[in-house]
Image (cartoon, rainbow, N blue to C red; front, side):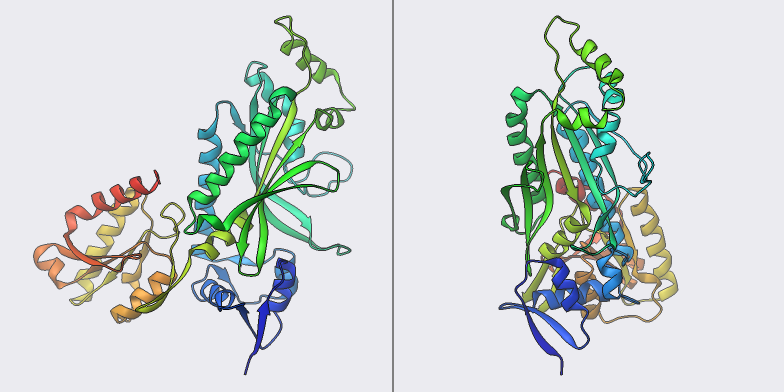
Length: 403
């Protein structure tokens, strides 16, 4: 019989170490949320579990399965849309994983790339403040104190350059904006909160955290910095900074280097936060559901077979799948599975994958063009004509993007 472990630690590191002890099941205080979360992620291949070890998890070497990577892509897409639509003059860049220099070590954050290319980007916006530099990319970090092993993570970074007089206003703006963004996609928005601290370098920081079953973990940090960040980066070559100051001061005003608000998002931890947030246990009928926000759901529609001639029904499903994909609606081709699955088991499977809609094609579809549509969150099944399916789903997705 497996042991019972009550997770009280706030540390993901401790969580992983406990997780991988043989014969141990995970439970949170009062409910088995951690146990169910891990089980669903492994069985539905959000995380690929074969060959997992403590070392591979601690250094970020575990793999994401098809629904896991698709959901992560959706989250990154929403992050970029936030950056592009939030303010004017936010410029995207893509820098090297190994910054130039004698050390050649992999980067630990995305700040240095923005600082290095500050002058070039400022020229593109006609030397005017404020403006931002944004990037998404892989970084490496030390797993634990005294441990030389490194872990891989995907970060999103926005460096917002502004005058010292407006820094506090921009800090308040971006904190409000980012907290609303994280809460926008959550089933339980209160799971995301913020707190202020000073980091080891004495820099003022505001953390946005999520309340995981094992405790609160930071998903994003906002830091405010003075102009020393730029001067240190360009200490060996101040000519470009002088050119920058010259252009900024052309209108006769005194020109100074800008201050900086740096927003760093841990998109891997954010990905896990949204899976934890989506996990729902419905008592009647008993079922586990991943209620992802439609914009994050890795699969929008599952196409499957009801009663009828399998060969003919698969042809109908293939045509529907092509039509939906042409409208950029992701489809799970359940109709390709050889053995037919009882409907209730089928619905359990798709609920645990977070699929928004299940479409059943049957002999009735061949006769009259009618098919069955089931909604994940309501479990209501409705009948509609095959010609109306794409329009209905497109309308639903468009409405979800405005939530």
